[in-house]
Image (cartoon, rainbow, N blue to C red):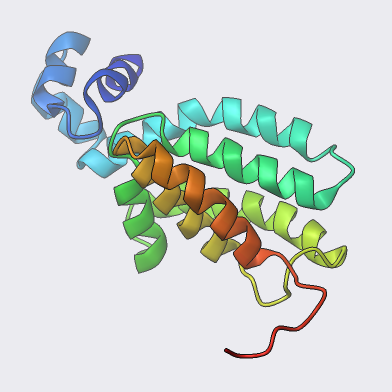
Length: 177
């Protein structure tokens, strides 16, 4: 598993599975027997890597201001989604498709559930519109992570505040233009 993680970190999620097997000292058949698809191997590696994110979640959940906690969670989630080049795409596809047979659906569901904790706290305090859903914030954060991975940091700097102001509750209703 550590070999796969190193390959994903160095070469992105499109790395050669045969190269992973070779470096791990196993045959490709053995790798495919345990992980029949790239997504299955990626899901297993993400499970290992998720400990850091879970630790950050435990710290962020203690922040008294739920809006600040939500903002910091979304940033932590974005960092997590950028751990491997190309990771946002299959996670976004798994979250959008809601395909129960995809090995990446469960990790996405876990991330969406964690996002929901922060979102509900901010909604209870009136900081976030009630119709905003955790899945939507997850997809928006995944999109920002994808853009960040493409090296468009200026775009990311503009998108983060846009997403934030898009989910914040406005004190004054705006009239249509």
